[in-house]
Image (cartoon, rainbow, N blue to C red; front, side, top):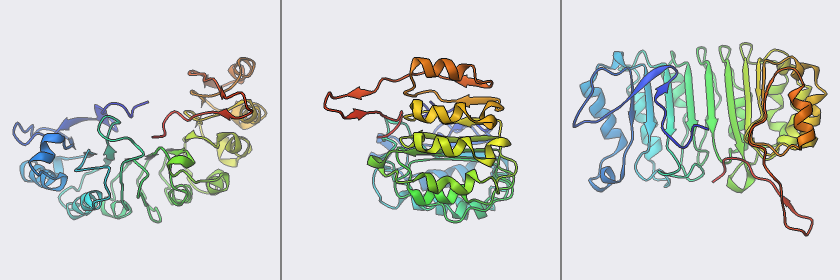
Length: 312
């Protein structure tokens, strides 16, 4: 799933972990992450970043990975300070094209505990940015998104605020090829509705889109019928509704969609579909990922429980 371990690359660039005591000055993408010992000695992400820029020529850096910062679970202003530091260094980083803001595993801080900030200044600061991945929905804001070069936008959360969902779905991103939004659950702040993704599904924006992911959603059964008849599905190659609580009800709409049948790939892994429905989906036409079939919890009193793959 990619959230329980740190990536080795970012947009195809090998990531070098920055170590001020044993610096590797040859990297093209650097990650900075604080651990417990860093916290004890009072280190901050911003100060560590400043040390990196003093040692490595900024024009050499094409990718940055913002790992765990000081007390990432606390709304202490640290994430905001990191955004400010990155923006202030934009002239030193003229070739930055890939950024992962929040490379924090569950062992470091649960995804729903991560306290993010308003990242909208990043869009204007880095005109060459092609890849942006953000993890954590708490306190996250993205503003009105406009960018001429961005090709990949990934927003991961155990519960994504509806304002962020609406902003992503209404973004002005003419070069975007990959849009991946983790909707999450209401229990952890995911209050988006199917109507919030309507501007995206209408297909009037995102002319270059090839991959659409509406993942980790507890309302996927409500979204699936809208997606199945959405104009945008007629021109994408991959539809990803994985990690959610899809049942036969939502899957039936996908089965009946001519546009879905023409996709290259339909990713539904981690779902609650029956064996019979899985057999029908497998014959739909595109490559269909039906791994991780889950079982509904039934308490015997008429209440049933289904869970997304990533929440807390």
